[in-house]
Length: 273
Image 1: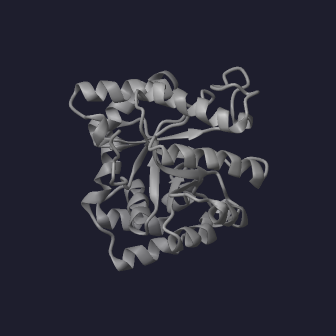
Image 2: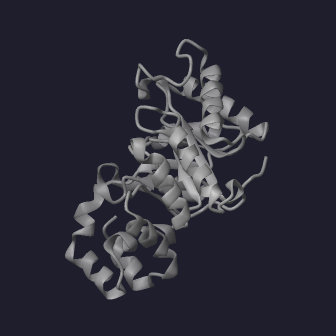
Image 3: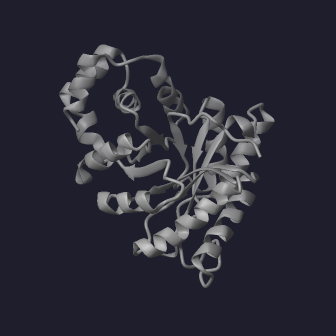
């Protein structure tokens, strides 16, 4: 089991790729992505296709040890009833273990760099029951980090954090206006060494990307609006996910680390959030 010590600052997201998953994952890796986000949720992810894309990239020289793989355990209510990847009648700990074993098979990897709880369960008791199983996988060195997604309630997240023996390393949420861009949650994350991952970053923020002031910053920087937004987020410590299906955009997304936004630009962009 080999741990990937460095956490990449940009992830490639694999949701809704269906039969294109393997080719797009291979393309993303060969373009330079070293972090891949997926889930054991056949409803929205072709996790086996992610594994195939990784194998295809390995044949062209990119080793598994160079990659940071992140998958998720999705509770029953987030699954397609006809394609649940574990026994729905099993106990929660067994559901987690069966889902994780399916991910290991799908990704051809015993070790998973990050395991995310796709969303909180109905109450804290059941959420903690799942979390303790995550902690067991962490202690057994099958998992490098554990975290949670789609958790927008600061009180709930604090309670999970306080009761967790192994603290969440990641909080992965939609990044959009409706939740106030998770300002209070992000502040808590910053204060407690939790990395905030964001998805739906471009799709939900057309109003920002199309704003004349934002477009002026992009033009002056000779960069695309998407590059400016992603770069801003990485500079304030957020880890964005991008799920583009365009090889051109993949390369542009990775080029955000070729430039740095100055204090003036950061302040102007920050006013949108």
